[in-house]
Amino acid sequence: MSRLLLCFTLLAVGLTAENAEKKTAFDKPTFEAYVRHLNVWSTQIKVDIADPKPSDMPGFSLVTVHASAGGASADFQYYVSKDGQKVVQGNLYDISQNPFKADLDKLKTDLQPSFGTPGAPVVLVEFSDFECPMCKEEAKTLRDNLISTYPKEVRFYFMEFPLDQIHPWGRAAAIAGRCIFRQNANAFWDYHDWIFAHQDDIKAENLKDKVLEFAKGKEIDALQLTRCMDNKETEAEVNKAQALGKDVGVGATPTLFINGRKLVGRVDWPNLRNIIDYEIDYQKTAHNAGENCGCEVSLPAPKLN
Image (cartoon, rainbow, N blue to C red; front, side):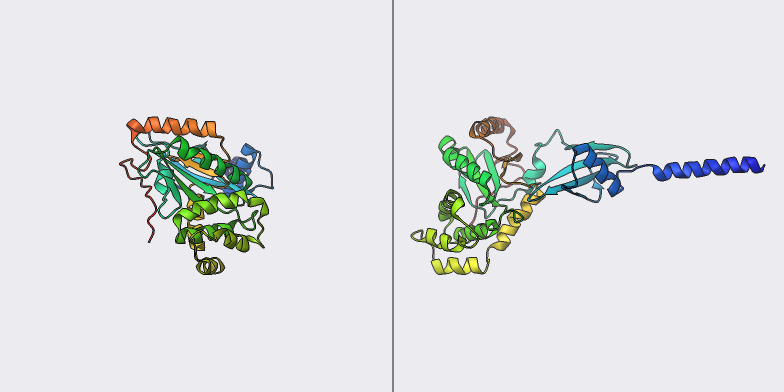
């Protein structure tokens, strides 16, 4: 009898140990170790595991993993089964909806600098940093080609996304740009082109003086501009654009959305043109993106007082 009892005891202990050792993706250290191994992420990459949220995939919860290093970051979506044993990585699509609808719903562009045709079938939204060298190259590509190639088919919106960790004057330049935009919307694009062209000459210490020098003859009140920069009156607008960028998964600049399609890093003009041409043709029948899509998505033109 005692031997039988001992066997049952040992079996119970074994089962308890087995259950205790059973891994689950809902244990954050366990899941972090797993995704680090999956993606070959060293300890130099910081990993944050979000709390699980309900998802549209039956039987699975959504867990977002935020990875960052220096000024770059990215979010990765994982679907975890209710028992924590199975993990699916990727995006979940509804075949009846635009595959980029989730981001389109979030890309609110009111009161952002823009150029192009209101109601255009293709909308480009760029998150950029005035101190970013790749943004400088992308800006020249877009400004040199976009409207000359598509005079009626596109509308472009600029979103400030300063990378504060690595660019010491990017935020101040974004604030100054918004100050100029407040006074003279058209002058903003002169500023945009000028600051990228003079990127190598600008430092945190001389930014203000150079901006004031630029503003001469631009129908901009110098005193008002100085006060706006000194008091950081437009920083809340920069923060709003930056927060929106983070909400749609922006972690590096430039990041461009073409009718919601996300492109990270500099994209050369032939590739951009192919995507725009595709969207123009596709929207002739789809009508589920652009500024005149007739759906819930709205990308209105700026309204200035």
